[in-house]
Each structure stands twice: as structure tokens, then as C-alpha cells.
Image 1 (cartoon, rainbow, N blue to C red):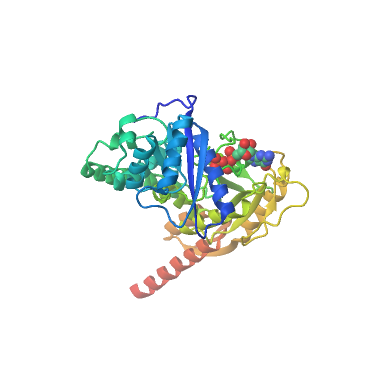
Image 2 (cartoon, protein in one colour):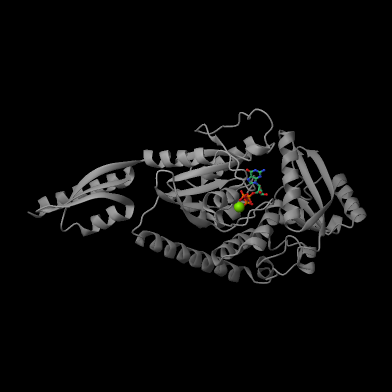
Length: 429
Ligand SMILES: Nc1nc2c(ncn2[C@@H]2O[C@H](COP(=O)(O)OP(=O)(O)OP(=O)(O)O)[C@@H](O)[C@H]2O)c(=O)[nH]1
Ligand SMILES: [Mg+2]
């Protein structure tokens, strides 16, 4: 493991991008700006940038021959330590580019993995990053660039991935199996704790593009002190806090890891366990940095990732944050299902309205219902208490009449179970 590298020794970075035929030129520029911020987050200083327009990347060298030579010259002049490409590279492309430029070469995915390796704090977070790293490295092992393995350390080489290079594939595969197993156990453990709780509370998850202000909002709402910083991927571990809504309903609110364009699929796969919990949320708050020039695209990216995680049809409130930075009229942003609310997690503007909206959205999905349980139904009684808020309980001669406020899905489930039980009793007679 090589996590010890100090961030204060800046490495010199040259960025390389390709605008392919059919690409939106503005999106390519935005993506390069984002790559620069990612490189800075990982401890780099940008000393040069190079772009090429091309029909498709060269399979051998990513850039065309002439452009690769130009990159070599730029690396020489700027004394660059590392060259970072804005698209995923094959092992052949990496190796050839390293040979031509005599500089360590990494791609966007590897850079993001590196930031995650630096930032993951919890055991689960670290295991997830390790899994993502070896999933990324495995297909690239044969072609590992010479410079990468020789130099060690520096951007793109941190985290457990480096030592794994020395293992043979069989051992790596075994490690993948072990990691998946351990992660599954952690997830199971969490589920047991959650299901064992009798004080069922509605769960609200804060999701959104990285740096949109998710942690700042959690802090503002709950008086917490989760690290909120003007950098990408400040949050890598989820934090849950309780919060009292204006209607006196208590909810759980969770801050999650941010999304980004071209999120490496290895990373999404590794974080699936954590992100899958979004499926259990009763409501999502989708935070958007409304002052960002690329806000509309960021919003679309988040919606796409949510869909891929099976949380695309969750009730959602779109929250346009950083409205204090907007000048004049609010822009027409929303491409989503609801109209959205404008807030500022820093000044507090719009927060009351947001809380009201959370309260009414959660309430709308909850219904009140009276069930009649026989004394034999203690398991259903537990379910009613776990998943609902009991309003009234009346002991009758043959059983219990119980009025509960709960989500419609759970009410339907209890009803189905009661029906199944009655059918079974009739069959028994
Ligand atoms: N002006 C202004 N700045 C804000 C607002 N909300 C957040 N910020 C700033 O935006 C930056 C990012 O905020 P975070 O809360 O860390 O963002 P995040 O979405 O949690 O980011 P990651 O965890 O990195 O994905 C910080 O510098 C915040 O101070 C806001 O309403 N107005
Ligand atoms: Mg955060």
C-alpha cells in the first residue's frame, strides 16, 4: 500500500484530451476543466494541456503520431511528472504513450480511483476502492507501463492497487472473491441492524453531482460538521443524521458520495453495495449547483446514474443549490420530473420551503389504516411497529385492532400477509 504520499509536493501534470467527430465541443471543454480539478484534487499542478480533434482515438497511441510527439515535447519542456488523458486508455495505448513521452501516463478513471484511494476513511470505503482498483488493473496487467511499475508512488499509483501488480492473476482473482464476500457481509450486517430497529423512520438520501453542496446542506439541516470543501469528491463515506421536520416528523437523512460524468464503471460496480441503499430511501433530494455553467448536463448525469442503480423512479425533490451565486433571474434548469426548489445551503435561503416540501412529500406517500390482528399475529404486529407509526391500539375479545400510519407499500404487504394467513386457516379447517 502506498497511501503515504504527501499532497503538498505537487506533481507536474500535463492534460491531454481528444474531441471526437460528433462530440459537443463545449462538453469536451467542460470535461477538460473537470479533469484539471480532479488532477488538482489528487495533488497535481497543471503545467500544460493539449487537445486533438480526431475521428477516433488511435488504437496504438491514443493521440495521432504527430500529436504524441508534440505531447513528448511539452512534457520535456514543462518537466512533467505525469500525463493524464481524459478518456479511458487501453494498456497498449498507455505503454506506447509512456514510451513516446518518457512520462508516466494515466487516464481519467485511474485518476478518480486515486482520489478515492486517498479519501476513503471507513473500512467499507477502503475495501470498495480496493475492489474497484483491482477490477481496473486486472485486464491491464500484461501491458502495465514500464514507468508505472518502476517509479511507484505519485498520482495514479496510490492505494492497494500497486502492490497487487506483483501478484499473479490467480491470487488477484481470489482477492476479488474475498473482497466481494467481506463487502457482502458488511452489507448484510447493516441490513440486520436496520431491520432489527423498531423505530422505523422515513429515510431521505441527498444525492447529486460532486461539489454541488450535499454535505453543506446536511450540515445546515442537522447542525453536523461533515467535511464540506470546494473540491471534487470531498465525501466518500455516507453519513446519516436524524432530523425533525416542521410537522414534528422525525426522519433520517443521509449524505452520499457524489456522481461525475464518465464515472468509471468499475467504481460504480464497487460502490454498488453502498449506493444500492438508495433503493431503500423513501425520498431523494437531488442537489444541483445551479450556478455551474454545466448544471443541466450534471443534472442529466445524476439522473442517468440513479436509473442505472435502480433508483430512477424514487420520489425526488430537485434542489437548485447555490442560488446566492446566481445573478438576476433564476435560470430555467429543470429537466426532471418535479419543478424543484431554489435554495442556498450557505445563506439558508429557501431552507424552510425545502423542509415543508420534504414533509409534505413524505406524508403524501403514507396512509392511515386500521388492521385487525388475531393474537397469533405477533410477527405482523412487529412489522406494523417496525414500518409504521402506531396511532391507536385497542384490545378486543378475539385480538387487536390497530390503527397505523405507514407507507402504502407496507400497508399493502401487511394486508396481503393477513389474507394469506386467513386462507391458510380456512384450508386447515
Ligand atoms: N455560495 C455557495 N457555496 C456553496 C453552497 N453550498 C455549498 N457551497 C460550497 O460548495 C463547495 C462544495 O460543497 P460540499 O458540501 O462539499 O459539496 P458536496 O456535494 O458534498 O461535494 P462532494 O462531497 O465533494 O461530492 C464548498 O466550498 C461549499 O462551501 C451555497 O449554497 N452557496
Ligand atoms: Mg460532500
